[in-house]
Length: 306
Image (cartoon, rainbow, N blue to C red; front, top):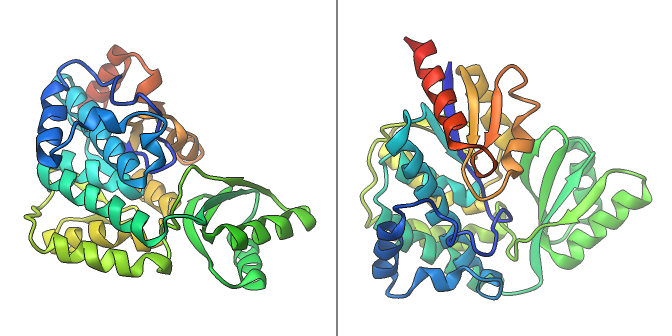
């Protein structure tokens, strides 16, 4: 019986998320501000969060702050995983990447993505369609629209230009298939459109120390554990341009004995995706769960392992 800390991706952001961090997070915010040369709290408002860079930095800091707070009081998880940008706080918590390096890399990641596609692109979630149906719709439309996320059996995300995504959604509606919902993401993540930004980020990663994770790190793209630092470096640098296979990541975690899935703030999107997989376990969002409940469940998992 094992536990997993799951870190959300872009789209889960909430204005004020850094204002609601747990006690003792001031030093983390100061360290991040010193690293960037700017006050990170100024990134955490509705206007600033229209920027991909601000969103990704806030998600990194929120995830690390809450995970550290939990681990100071309760047993550490057996596994960490993150959807897209969530891979970065996962790597920090696994002690594979230092926080200042993560802050610099995430700031660059957001800038590269935003600069490549400042407007007219994004992501759309399709619910109620299987993979074959989505692939058929993409083939019919053609152009700048791609498969991006395999989130669950019932949710697949596409990425590309606004016009091409709208055509896919219109065809799905005309055929009476599924529901399309535009996500709060302003770049076409997890597809070939971001190959060049991913390469630029990989060059920056070459100057950064990446260590073997102390907590097992599950890749959200390959859905496999990564132990080798060089492979982890490649996973983090390249994940912006690779399809996310979150449903396979969750299934792999379950097959490895994970029965406690804890979603780190902000939000509860990942919890909804995890519940069908962890029917025989527990799925909780830390944001809406009492700390003593989370602590008891983590200690229970440790006791089961003895």
